[in-house]
Image (tube, rainbow, N blue to C red; front, side):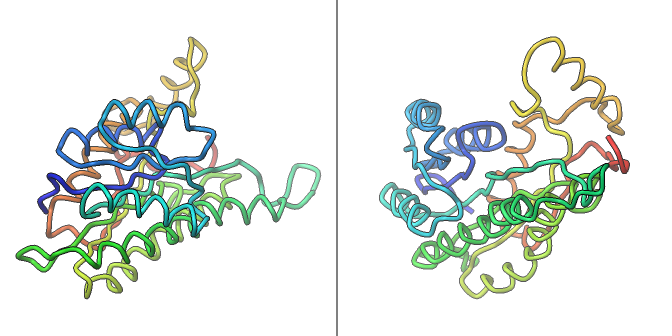
Length: 258
């Protein structure tokens, strides 16, 4: 798919996987809406200015806010790509060490943001993509979701996170089938251990990341956000990639406990 001059939305776009993806898409000629929470306004504005895009403060679960981000993208050019990177996760066992049950609202919130929020962005972006002029393959746009290896190898304490990411994997084929008639492809990336700001900074963080990296099959390190972004770009531009969930994890299979 030719993406030059088209617009894209990257959710969770102000940091981590989203930031790397926003930068790469802009480098390849797209006008990027860096979409993130309003608390990321300063960081998101700075990134958007640097890459020639715009920042949109939006909660992925809000129809109104996501629709505004879609409108901002369409103003810059035909919306050809959506990359869903926004997500959260907490480690909590189904019952705690003293037998107390998992907080149900916490479970709901993780699923609401990671799964419902992803679908909310898909449905609104796809509706806008449907108005695009189709290419020779009848293609109008491409969507890339972010799941996790936790969708397959969920560890102790990851019930909510694994359920939400498993849902993203589970709907990939169905939504791709739904959107095929509109000329929109849908794929999902399931990252493993990726080096993002979630691990912190400093000597302690570096030692922790090195220990995690030693468990990876090969190469024995954490993945890079740029490697995720490279795969996202391929899934957007390769016309024959559709309805797939793809692990990018260095071959790791997560054990029950970290």
